[in-house]
Length: 248
Image (tube, one colour):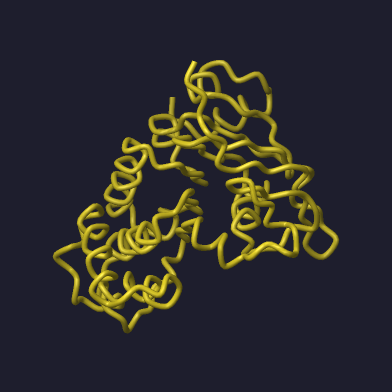
């Protein structure tokens, strides 16, 4: 039997804000090639979970082990973690007055210390993947929402991450732009990119995921393949949630 490598191991992850507990002892294993979608009601801790994995929020306790290194250990380098984990936000987080190309090459030059020619070659390859190669010299401020998000995905891919995190990548987009971004993520999934996706797009979640996590009040209520979650969920709470979020 072919054993997949465990890329990420989360153990006992807890996080509170102002005394309110958001994550309650999360345990999670992510294997190479996994496409894990995280669903659940608003306020259940979905975004906090992936922000803690990337240490944009510092966990109160627990272990976040990527490729054998526990980054919750204060001696571990978060710079190294951020080189290995690509994050795509709801709000794009691009430099508005920089071009598409500059947004992709800057992290390569400043973080990975590559020369400009090497950085440009990597950026071009990844912009091609997301269909943005013809917009190289367009400033980010001049792009549509869908184009901004595709540029943000290319920027994350440029770092050749071990793990991609998507935090509601279509929630800030106009409805007609959602499809183009979902198609890019679907393409990455089909190529074996390891990823965790927080999304409310249920048909998309069902079609791309290897596993679906349902979060409720900071706890993983259910962790199963999409066909089980969507057709035979074990939890009554999952059944109730899906009945409200999937059209008959």
